[in-house]
Image (cartoon, rainbow, N blue to C red; front, side):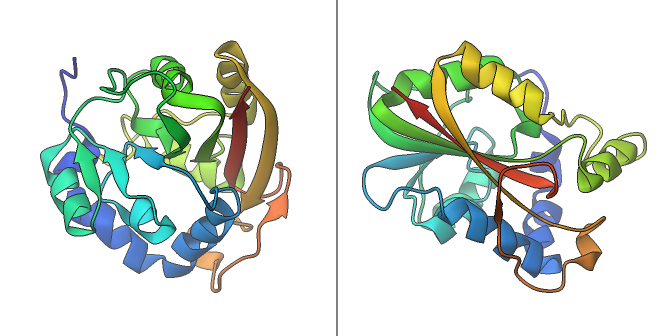
Length: 211
């Protein structure tokens, strides 16, 4: 069970206003994510937070534990399942695709990804977006952990760490996109076009397949 409150719950207004402060960052992330979101099938966002991504990407269902977060997500039209990510109340092979954006506040990324694999149908897709730990923006976020309530408890991951967990729990045929090109968020003055692969952009999107 969760024994601490997520900093996102305590700073929910600051979290939600971030998307207005950096609109082109948000639009660039959405542009990249949307390229991997299937056009058909039943999907769900895991750790939907305030529903910013699910609502914009046409995903109608979301998992969220924290009350303030789920209240805003519901206002954005998301059907919320109030549960922690590690114990999802869904049947095996239930969804065609799952989205997870920013795993840095998960309590156990391994159990969460194992659960995602369980609830996906054979042939289902897992779309994961995250700030890569060793990227330019990832390094800035790491530095902020020492004196920021927002970032203090965040766990940022490298591409190799994410790939290892995906492989461990049976995901195959990984595809990659990247966006957020620049050394900091303030440099991004327009919506960016994503590029294949990883290693240049700070925001990485992986589409992994359950075979």
